[in-house]
Image (cartoon, rainbow, N blue to C red):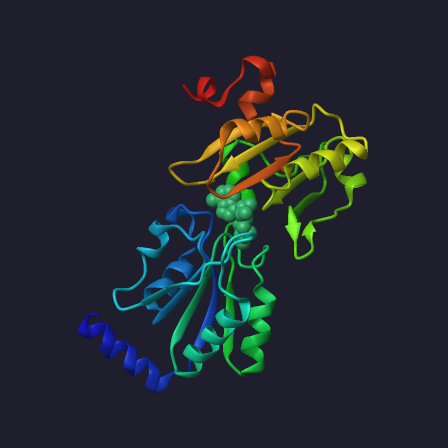
Length: 268
Ligand code: SAH
């Protein structure tokens, strides 16, 4: 901890009450942080971050910041939401400027409201700093737009699973030609999604692109169709965070016959 930083922090504590900024870290590439997020990171006394926040983003924290990983994972071991809430409240009440850093946008599948409710209940001041959600980064990497005149006037952000298991959706709407959906936490639910969509009449040739580690150096795109999705996922073995874009193919792959197009050939 640097001296100047200590001094600044204690000054801040005397003059300002604690505060929690709920900040979007974007999809991973630090270049995709907002300026407001960067400033919040530089000024934070404490940063409480999700497992998916990239190391490049955390490297932008001020030298004196205490960095705490509060990992939450859909299926694996994780912090309890109550423990995270309690930590945020305790630090803010002690006068700290807290950054609660969440991957992507903090308002998209990030349990933002539970944290806000806990902060409100404790009388802690808070604010939200939006971020670039992974759907935007994944589509940008594919050279695609998420909405397109004449194709889709609506975009759905859906989750592959919820508290009860695989999540039910409006399958009829999703199965319509031209429908576009960004499916978060969808890797494990792929077979379920495929089954539900086919059952509701979706064209098996509908493109589905799996984008792993969007915006990161190890970004990987696996273009598939609804029919080939599960085989494709089994073949590529993805370990990083991945989003499924239903109804979108990478721009180049869309123009080529599917059997000859692989991501490597297209990019070389
Ligand atoms: N708030 C985040 C979403 C959190 S839910 C956002 O706005 O992006 C976690 C899911 O987000 C992951 O299971 C994955 O589907 C998706 N995700 C997060 N970061 C990603 C990335 N860099 N590339 C692809 N998908 C990502």
